[in-house]
Length: 112
Image (cartoon, rainbow, N blue to C red):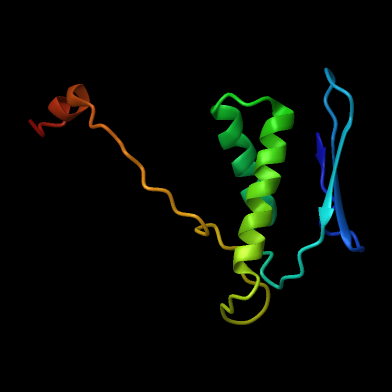
């Protein structure tokens, strides 16, 4: 279970990861001042799932996901998108993907 502290007051954000097979893991970082915090929880959970799919341990996945969310918050802190709370900047560091076409799948689709 990940207990998030982002909505609590203070200059530090403290999260706690609890798992049955590990010691409690406390994680803290300075709070990032931004009005663009919409979607941070969904982004965090998606990033954790993505890192788990890549084979990281739960603790590693949570730490990497927290780092991604912090970077996205920093990148989007000065962006103005309408009224109220805006989204964090998910596209702060685009990566060129090299994908090889699957010949078998292409032939099934009639592309060959």
